[in-house]
Amino acid sequence: MTKKITQNFRGLRASVIHPNDTNRQILCAVLGKLGLVVTAVEAVNFGDFHNCDVVFVDADEGIDALPQTEKCASDLLMLPCIALVGNEAPSRLARVVRRGCASHILKPVRNTGVYTALLLAMNDHAKKQKMVGEIEALQQRLAGRRVVTQAIVGILHEHNVDLDTAYAWLRAEAMTRRLTIDIVARERVANLGFGMAHSSGKRPDLDQPIKNHRNRRSTQ
Amino acid sequence: MRFEVNLTKTEINIGIMFSTSGSYAAVGMSMFAGSQLAISEINADANLPFRFTPVVINPGGVITAYFDAARTLLSKHKVNHIFGCYTSSSRKEVLPLFEKHDGLLWYPSHYEGFETSDNVIYTGAAPNQHILPLARHLMAHHGKRGWFVGSNYVWAWENNRILREALIEVGGKVVGERYFPVGELDLDALTQQIIHDRPDFIFNTLIGESSYSFLQSLRTAALAAGIDQPSSMPVASCSLSEAELPLLGESASGHLSSSVYFSTINSPENNRFVGAWNRQFSHLGHACADAEATYIAVHLLASAISRGGDASFASVQAAARGLQFHAPQGLVTVDPDNLHCAMRPLIGRSTAEGTFDILHSDCGPVRPDPYLVWSSLADVSAQRNGSFVWAVK
Image (cartoon, rainbow over all chains, first blue to last red; front, side, top):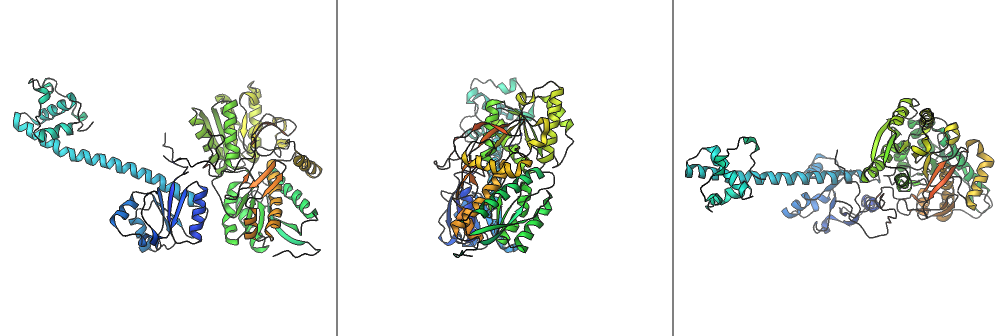
């Protein structure tokens, strides 16, 4: 079953960064009808993105007028951003791309089109955030790999066993202690006494060799 | 123009753009009749300093003809106000013209919502006033297994989506779902499938002749199968009206409809309206919701002109906000924010006499919520005046 999209934006806090003209007035009126709590401000008066869930920014002038700090740029990238586009020249649109705007509304702003832009931006942003989370988790696993390899090489040298045995040993240790293999490997590398749980000398991995190597996972 | 105190009435041209021919002509003729009734009342009112002169164009149910009709009315006849459209596709088609010409479309039909144009006054029911009350009624009285059949355009898609989500939320099921081109009449295979599936109810968003053909075919097939269709699997819709019942013949009775108006409402305003209707338009069947919505729209324009002082777009649009009218259905108020109307939802069941028995009536007018921001199936009394609730997860 396909995941249900977010379609009700009641209570969402919107910042509209745009000169006070008809475009801004129409946009704010429609956002109000959609149940959003709107703060409208000109770019030069703009403070920060706290207390804000979605940003509407003027792509003609406003984006450049925003504070040019790294923090401002990264804060903006963390929020769903909708560009209000009047001028379609590539140089203007390049800034929209750089700011990571998820959707846009063409000027002059009409009542029609605001809901579509908001819906696309919110859903696209949710998808992006999910992907960012997945990428972070994968990067952590990737970083952990280096330590696991280090630990395996350590076992290999210390106990004179082959690569598969060293890995199986490390894995068995992790399973017995109910820890991730990354943590056990990190302990080993930090000389915290690898194999302490098996101080009896018994090595369960060697007694019960793991047949299915495809099931190996470095993190649980 | 400002009204001067003189003995002659100012003539105000208004556009009338209903399809009085084509596949949904029955409804179009009722809407046209509703406008005529209101125009004659306004023109006979000695207290008003103006009279309406209708400029009529019939788009014949052809979607592209609406664009030409609206353009002719707005640019050639220079009217500021047009009463017209029934389908949402036709309204979407003409909307840019109204924005370009500073025109006001008085749209007198229930629709699926998700639109708020400053160039439209919506005098028909919004989705929180028709589909949500119907969903509540169906689940409370008939069950959670629905079969959805509709004409292939946005009215059907969107209403079906709302009802589908409502059903799934309470563990219900959409047994089947089919869409047909507007005007499709060959629906026997569909009715056989529905008889075979035996849903708790059928949700019908077919319009015009397709709907009549479907209701007749279903009733015939159900009788042949020995099924008491009205009680064991009723057909429910948000559009079936008195205008259409005479076209259903033997199959007219036992269908559920969600509407803000039925001709059987008992009130002095409605008795007067129905009396006038029956004198002039009884050949169109009983008065119906779309006719009443058109009647309301024309009266609201007259009130807005009186309130604002002239018939210009800006003046009328501003004056219409918050305007009230004691309509045949009860008190109707134009919402100051979204230009839809606060109206009271009703559920009716059609009778063989071409009317509806009113099975349920909300306790009062419900504020329009075209984007379904404030309403939900679970929260019957959802009020926008309450505190903000975090709805986005």
